[in-house]
Amino acid sequence: MQSVTRAVFPFSAIVGQDEMKLALICTAVDPTIGGVLVLGDRGTGKSTAIRALAALLPPMQAVIGCRYACDPADRDAWCAECQERHPGGTIKARSVPVPVVDLPLGVTEDRVVGALDLEKALSQGIKAFEPGLLARANRGFLYIDEVNLLEDHLVDLLIDVAASGENLVEREGLSVRHPARFVLIGSGNPEEGELRPQLLDRFGLSVEIRTPTELHERVDVIKRRDEFERDKSAFVAKWKKADVALRKRIVAGRERVETTSIPDSVLESAAKLCMQLGTDGLRAELTLMRAARALASFELAETVDVSHLRRISTLALRHRLRRDPLDESGSAVRIERAVQEALGA
Ligand SMILES: [Zn+2]
Image 1 (cartoon, rainbow, N blue to C red):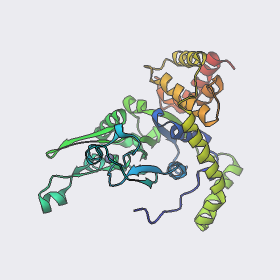
Image 2 (tube, rainbow, N blue to C red; image 1 turned 135 degrees about the horizontal axis):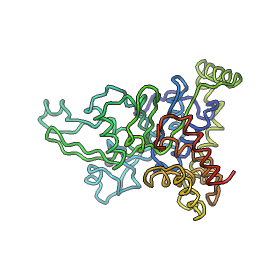
Image 3 (tube, rainbow, N blue to C red; image 1 turned 120 degrees about the vertical axis):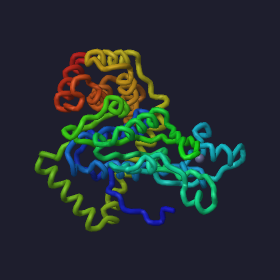
Image 4 (cartoon, helix red, strand yellow; image 1 turned 135 degrees about the vertical axis):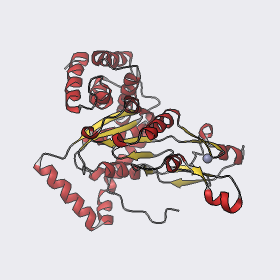
């Protein structure tokens, strides 16, 4: 199916944007952290970074013939079609790249959730389901540019699916339920519209990206982009070693994340920090804990310590502060202060 692979800008070649890279790596190590909200300027290479990360990740094994790319090793998460077709026998799998699916603004609900396959209905009189974007994003990334401008009914739908990991379609005489677990990546400019708190809460981490202000950084960005455009395969080859090394570290991190331990003292520090900031509910602590553990695992540490917590705290908490959650500069300062008070200098 993927006979033509387009050259993707290498993740390792991205200049700066350390917060975004860190957030993406953490969610790649542990996807249960939730998605990443990217706040900031246009034209800062947000979509490039996500595509680069997906291309960097090892391909996934998927059940052959499954429209949702079910994981052959995760029987509990199989779609109804896989359950029916492979009740106990052997299954054939193939390698597929980790999907990155764009959800454009103005998209219809049919395209997102899937709909009745009209062609089959008209030509053969069969009621069949035509999967939508949520099906294609299963086990990968769902990217929404300008998520703050997304229509309310789609936001509601996404909140439901992101929480349950399943897409339930009941319409036009269809009743279909299929797995839809994805890392939600949303970008937005806070000045152009607020995000509903329920949706904000769905994002595990948030990062802020700005056009680089350092002269040499700007020059590096332009140089590398130009080099890539002029000879994509040579550029990709040049960065291959760095990308492969990073992939190995992510894979090693994934393997360790189950066994990396978090001492009670670190959990207490996390709770103290969240109390200091007055975050609602316990999701903030949970995310903080998972992200710190993912970071520690990525760095091959055996246990999580306060330094992991410190480095991840702004990313995990910035969008959870009650007052004006999208005033990111103010948020970062407030978190920094709370970190100093709760975790020490
Ligand atoms: Zn399946």
